Length: 100
Length: 219
Image (cartoon, rainbow over all chains, first blue to last red; front, side, top):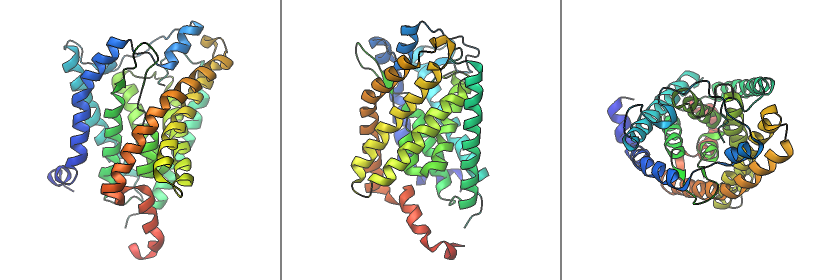
């Protein structure tokens, strides 16, 4: 399948993913505003456990170093979704096994 | 549910890495043996990318405890348990390696919670319950999939010294909170699965399996 066929055949799914990425900066701002905290962080706080980060990642915390946070979040979302799409496509192709 | 570095004792982290590697190897074996239809390869990529994007949408719950969509049930119901596990593995691994979300030492444990427990629990619940009602089945798959995934996270950190070996504290905190928050996961799962069932029922794993009855003639 070539690139153009892929886009045309799956435009609806691609659009849904793009809308989610577009909304992600808003959700990030809203999460900041309410003091987002997951149950695991609550447990850690309760028992005094502290994380010791070993590695921050290329785009730490879904942001682009040096970029404004909403734009950074958007770019991180776009890059992450694209990388995930390519990797999962490639991995599935690699392990697809006997075909029909 | 993403455990960062520093929360797990090294022996626990290693045991989970081994368990996870065994299950992933088994999934790859099953996928190779059964084969993946050429048309399903882009769908696998899109499901993984969609779950990555959806995980970025944190639910801003005021004043309390928050969470985000995990997606193991969605992956399991669309792609089946084995490819669904590989899709979640791609998402969680990329989150750790590219975005520093979830520790490197904790990756085996995080994969066990989100790519194995969540996916397989959700898949088998859906498989059994969908004979009666697919909406109720997707809801329960989404809800209990992440609740049990979270309980696994609670067990792993609770067995570790940073958490003072307080498994009796961590498991209830993780289980109860994610049990409550999991209702949202269940509702999102129902919405996605119902939509796909209505518009592209042919891409669901259950319908591709039915077609396989005439396996011999498909070559």
